[in-house]
Image (spheres, rainbow, N blue to C red):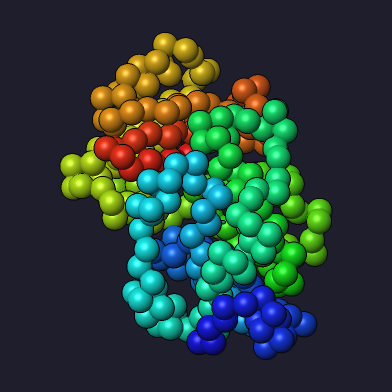
Length: 269
Ligand code: PAF
């Protein structure tokens, strides 16, 4: 596995005329990331993974400091899975002109995490824009667990670049909790409670699919979720096409964001 620290050398050494799949990550790799790599391998000749914990997408300094970092283990995992290239830029490489956000998102898009994590997606779009500008891969891969992230990347970046955006399914543990790098920060009891929340989401979705959505039903699920976490940030049903609150019965998703102690988790079904 070749390791690069600068766009310059990466672009000299990788032949992007060959089909290359790019998987951007913030490290602390788990089976969700491995699924992105597997999907990239299916479609491309070579796979490039990046590990960069992007400071501008954290709206809270402590959250940035506490974000899990597992660099040595990540390298072993990537080598084991025969990843061809690894990119590990530093802050200067990404933010030549100071650590600032380049993007603004429309008021209309300030829902769910964009409302509760002020500036988060502006930071995500800034770094993904920089990656896509410099790395001319055939495809770039993201997981559907971060549904709103993917929605906004498509909306704001898709038309700017030739790289095709590929979305891969959410990978869950055997008790339905979506895999996330943050899960390793959970105590055993918080993990169990989070698994119950994910199960409630599936259960609620099935009920909505069987009969019309009703406010009382939503409130009763909300109460159950509140009991299973330390703070509920949001629990919402939204149109999966445009994230508006205009629900189409066939095209909707249930979104949740909550805290277990100081660990913030999200899910959508
Ligand atoms: O989903 C993530 O891990 C990050 O938001 C991303 C896309 C690597 C940008 O920092």
